[in-house]
Image (cartoon, rainbow, N blue to C red; front, side, top):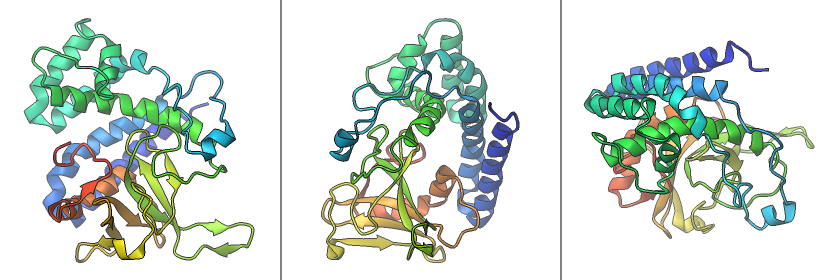
Length: 301
């Protein structure tokens, strides 16, 4: 049974983290003021979402070990029925957060409420599966809003699925649940229960840009091309922020943001932490490297 207090607790934690990061990085205060409430409302929707309905997918361990992610054949269950009610809650928050988009977001909400836009088309827009047109709404705004509406529901489904493969070997840079590319990574403190010792330097986890699942990845490797040559792998940091870095591969010219949380008492929300790393993100792009996947605030996304 869903804890009735959990959605509020998770949402408030995100708001508190956004406020703390805004204090640390005044140049990003307006971005945290905009995205903080949106991420918090997404968290409420995710905590209240139904998750995976019915029997969970069957995992073929052999296929999985060969690199076939869990939902390769089926994809996520349809979340379209959830979107009209979610739009009533999330779109007004987005209108306040992004005044320049307020008219378009309001038009999108009306189209959805009045039957001018089928929820199934909104889901397709989120995954860029088909061109969708809504009067008064640009394609970029439609995709942005659709992605934000769909995301909490597929994240909730992914939480149900990831447990099926946590103990199975996965050696790919893509998400083991949905095949999405990572847009963030963490170093986390882990304990080897068999040896009762702390793993040296922490464990590297990738964070899926699509469903927010996390999975283990080799510390010295490129999740995009698999390169393990130390001479072609390096990282960049911004002065004064030693726990934040970009892991870069010279071979394929890609990078992924990384937060070292080994010494942290509390692990911050991945999206909030990634937003705080926007200056580093921009710096690495300026050097000519491309992210494996972006965030809603990423340039060109």
